[in-house]
Every structure is written in structure tokens, then in C-alpha cells.
Image 1: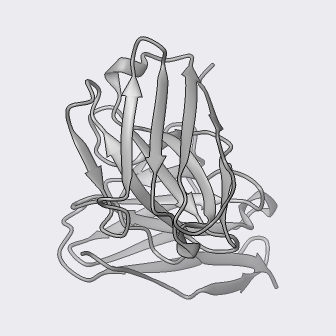
Image 2: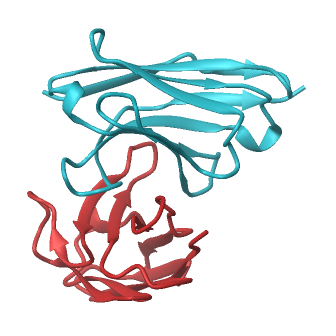
Length: 106
Length: 120
């Protein structure tokens, strides 16, 4: 089974900061990686698919990059609405999620 | 408007069974792969199972294979999962989710979830 490891598990940041979350796959998943945002008590929201493609309606301050086994999600100029937990998910084989990264207010 | 609504959750003893359902509307259900994704309290997400548009293709995560059975009724726009031999570690909120058309096992619409608690 493919394992997904996210880092950090928690990230403290301020409005306006640029933050980067890393996701590593235990084996090559090409570009079959998605990122989701989840707020407390809410369902996950798809942000990015195929490593770098922005889902319709998602602000352009979100961007994704990477291929193979290492991927990043970058949020430029963090907004109050962005404080949430972020999950990566590989969909090369099965659909494993990473453990999540909570972005909270510094 | 796309809507997914899960039902059937509750408290069940270890070894017991439960059948979850998901009623959908607002899109062409019979065109989509559908999945169940779960989230243990305070924990991350775990994809559980999916089913092809016509119901002929089914996939499961290893930890539920042989215990859970996913099914669908396209005439009734409904998705189901029969969960047998339940274990403590199956305790979670179970979400039904639509897979993005033609994109693979990624999810664009989610229900609000139904809580399954496995405990004696």
C-alpha cells in the first residue's frame, strides 16, 4: 500500500504569510495527487488535483507542485478563511490520504 | 444543486453489522463512480470503498475487504455499504462522496456524514 506523509503536522502562521505544506509518497505516484481543505465540523473541499491543477472556484493563492514522490501545497498571502486542516491524497493506486496539516493562527 | 445525505449510522457492538445509505440528487448519479470515505473522531481521512457507475466494479481498502460490501441502486439514486464484523477501529464518521468525472479517485461532492460507533 502507498503511504502518504505530510509535514508539518501543525503550522502556525499569520495573515499575509506564505505557507508551504509538504507531502511525500512511499512510492512513485506520478502526478496523481490532490489537496483538500477541511474546517472544523465541515466536509473536505477539493483544492487541487493532478498535483498542480486548481479546482474551479479555488482562489489562485493556492498552488500545488511536485511529481513522483514529493509534493507541496503553497498558500500565498494567507487569508483568515485559510486557517484549516489540509490533506493530501494520492490516487495513483487506491486513495490514501496524508495525516493532515493544521494551519492555525500564530 | 448536488445533494448527498447519509443515513444508517449508530451504536453497534463489536462483531455487529450496520448498513449505511446515501441518497443523492442534483446530478446524474448513474454516470459517477461513488466512494465511501471515513474519518475517525479527531483523526484524518481514510478512503474505504468505491463502486463503478454500473455497479460492476468495486474496490476496498485492505482493512475492510471481506467485511464491507458497497452497492448502489441507480434507479433510486442511492449508494449503500453493508458493514459486517465491525471492530472498534471502524468507529468514524462515514461520508459518501462523488468521484470527479474522468479524473480518478478524487472527490468533489460530499455528504455531511453519519457517525458509526462500535463499542460494547
